[in-house]
Length: 162
Image (cartoon, rainbow, N blue to C red; front, side, top):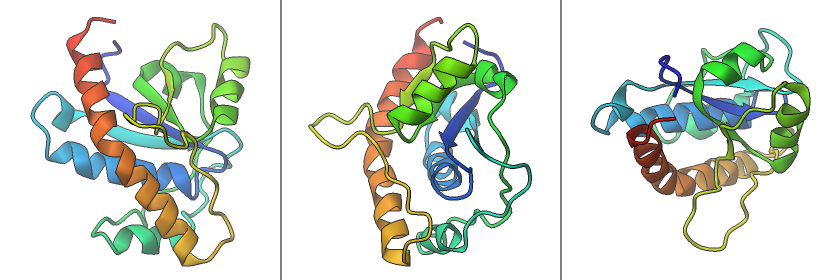
């Protein structure tokens, strides 16, 4: 396992889903015992530009649950970010496939954010970009629903030498 103690969340442009996921997961980890509490969650996008603002609806959707992500700025995924991460959490299979194709050797730490949910559920989180606030809130809620099983996975991952 990398020593950096980071988790990387990945979507397309890094302005909607991955910043929301990073904010939600960082908030959830703050209430966990060590070593989870010390993990830093960062986000990036497979087709992101450097420095774009997070979408206003993403900011509003998280503000409604007491989390401020307004200061986050977009950045592209880099090999270094992926290699430094304990895990990389993608929003869709397409994001995971893109990273597997563009990083050599293909990373072994790629997962879907909703991959660890115990029951049959859609494992992908759709892109809310351009939609009304209710779509962003639904996206947020899909992420929140995944966090308990994700934290259980992280506990196991951190307890097992990589």
